[in-house]
Image 1 (cartoon, rainbow, N blue to C red):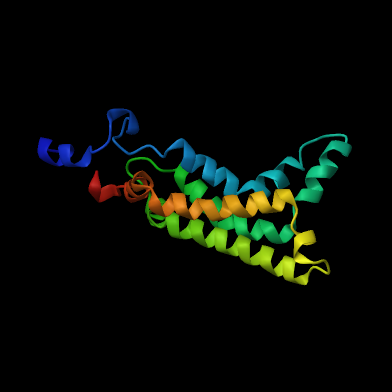
Image 2 (image 1 turned 120 degrees about the vertical axis):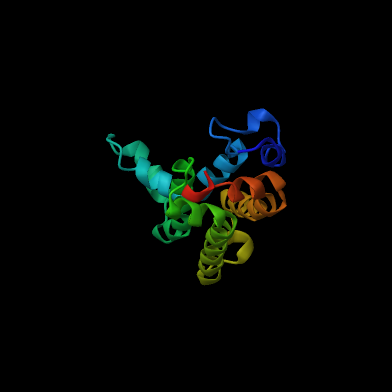
Length: 165
């Protein structure tokens, strides 16, 4: 790699790059991914060996239909863990579409919530409690971060294949 393309490529501070000169995914992006797969994580925790009483609360939090919304985000998280130079083809295809896939995950989640709320026999103000409202507001804030952050746009674009190394 010559010096000129390297200078054009390094538009961020050196601490933003890993040893392979790939942009590191920011901590907020990883926290976003954890948030978007929270139902899968809670479901996994319920299978840990325990006496059962303390896990009952978690089992009640996990709705099976909400796990469906976590699956696209889990795919992006798996691609993020496998992102190294050179990126395998499947990782590159998923990672370069990460913002779209994560937005789809949020749309599925909001759609499922809206269906559940319209099917509820309670008035809307009674059907929405504080945890649900916080979850909904955070879910709506995630696409703003994904689509407004230049760093996230550059990180998802930075996944070179075998021919780019």
